[in-house]
Image (cartoon, rainbow, N blue to C red):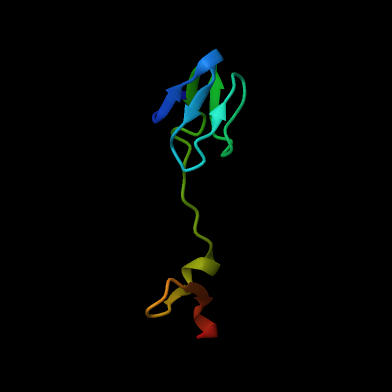
Length: 82
């Protein structure tokens, strides 16, 4: 385990994780919404430190992003559907 970054101490050994927009208030012994940050005795630890990896499936490698001009709309399509 590795002591996490981007967190703040609260009352009663609770902590607030500030890594994402959820700003989880985590009580001692519990994990945040993501499941990879845990409060142990008032200190937030990153349980996944050094264990992250990227896995891209064949399906997504052969897909293409279509962005509609003038909008915020996008979609992923496989190459054979275009």
